[in-house]
Length: 107
Image (cartoon, rainbow, N blue to C red; front, top):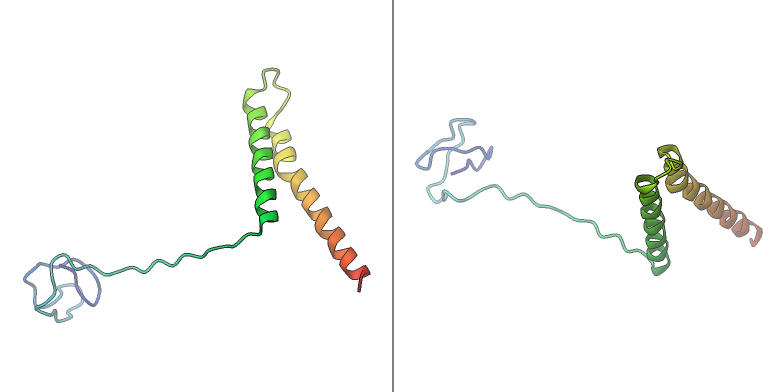
């Protein structure tokens, strides 16, 4: 059984917890454990965002395949980083700046 105060395992017939000294109820069952509540967060993505995530996933997978199956050793890890991470980030940043600038111009 487990202590109702500290949650540590104690003998089934214990009246007091040997770890914290808390008095135990007689109705505590051996299978009783502390319940841990797990919270999850759901992120709702728009259809446009989902589409771009799929496109980026395909792009990342394609560059990963080129990295491992390049027979002429032309495609190195540094190129993988440039094509799979840096280039999409630069494109995303450019689009974000363009949208930010165009939203200021329309005001």
